[in-house]
Image (cartoon, rainbow over all chains, first blue to last red; front, top):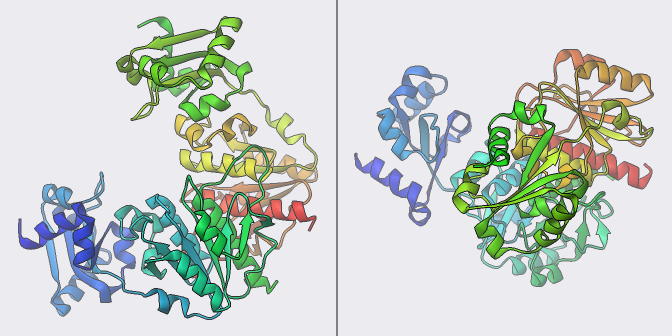
Length: 262
Length: 262
C-alpha cells in the first residue's frame, strides 16, 4: 500500500484529517463524469473497473498525465478497502475542497439562499443541495452543528449538484440571519408554529429559506431573529414533513414566483 | 416456535404468502401507536420491549384480551428472528390487509389522485403516500409492476400515512387513465418532455398526477393516453428530480391551487 492509498484510507476513516488536508473524495461513475477537472488531485480505479469501463476515464487519464496528477490502478480487493460504499463501482477521485466564503456567497444581491440549522441527515443535505440547484438557488449556509457537507453520503445524494451548488459553514448562523436582514434580505423560517403559509410570502427579492433540525426544528433563538415564520399547510394527520421535502416545496414555490414574476 | 411465529416468519420472507393470507405487518412504536384497532389481528413484543415500554401497549393488550386476539411476548433473540429491521424496536403487529377498490377510490368526484406506473423504490412510494396525505390527495392507484405497497420499507417510509391513504393496484393503468378522463378527470403526466409547466395547469377540478419509473420515466403508451404532459422547470444542470420529489412538488402545487381557489 503506497502513501496515497494510506492517505485515502485515513481521509475515508477520519473526516477531521480530510478537513485538515482540505480535500474530499467522490466515488462512482456519475460523480467522476461530472467532476470539475481543475479540482482533481488524483484518481484511483480498480483493475476490474478499468477492464469494463472506458467512458471518460481515458480523458481523465490524459488530463492526469498532462497535469502530473497521479492515476493509480489497484486490485479489486485493494479498491474495496479504500471505498466507502458497500458495492463499490471501482473508481474514486480525490479533489481539492471548495473554499467559498459566506460573504462571497451572500454577495449576490437578489439571491435566493438556504440557511440550515443543525441539519443532521446526510441524505437530507444532499437532497436539499440538489433541490437548491434545480430551483435556481444561489447558495447554502450551514451552521457548524450541521452534518459535514463533505460527508460521502451527502455528496452521493446530491447526484452531481455538489459540484455546482455553493455552500459555506457559518460560525454563527444567528449572526448570519441578522446580517442578511440588515442587507435587505427576507428570512423565511420553516416552523410548525408559523403564522403565514409558505406561499403567502414573496421570494422575488433577496431571500433565504431557513430550515432546522429533523426532529427538533429550529432553535428559539434563530426563529426570533428571522423575520417571518412560515408553515406548509398540511391535510390529514401528517404532523410534519421531512426536512428535505419541506425545503424542496418552499424552494420550488420561490422558483415559481421568480419565474412568473409574481 | 409456535404456529403464529412460523406464520410471521413466512409472511416476512415470502411477500406472496402475505398477499395470499391478506395480512400485513407493521413494526415499531410509531406505527403501533397509530394503527387502526379494527384491523389488528395480533401483536408480538419482545420481553426487552415489555420491560422498557408501556405507552399504548397496555391499551392494545386490553384490546387484544377483549377481542380475543393473540398478544405474544417472546424473548429478544426470538423477536430478532421475526423482525424485518436491523435494529428491531421489539414490537410488531399483524393486520388485516386493506381492500379498497380502484372504483371506490376514484368515485370521489372532485378528487385529487396519484397514478404510479412502474415505481420501484419502496422509499419513494412511502414518501409519495406521505406527501399525498399531507397535500390532501384522495388516493393512489399503482400498476401491477410497481413496488408492493405492503413492502415493510414502504410502510416504514410513510410514517403512519399508510393507515390513512387509500390505495389500490390497477391491472391496467392505461385503462385507468382512459376511464378517468372519460369521467371528466384531467391526467397530468410528469414527463421530461412535457410542454406545459406543472404550475400552468389547473388541479382544482377532478385530477390525477401520473408519475413513472425512477430511471425510465413513463411508458409511451400511457403518456399518449394522458391528456397533458407536464414538466417541472429546473435551473442549473439537474437532469431530473427524484420521483418522490417531483410528485411532492406537483401535489403541493395542486394543494396550493385548491386552497387558494386559483
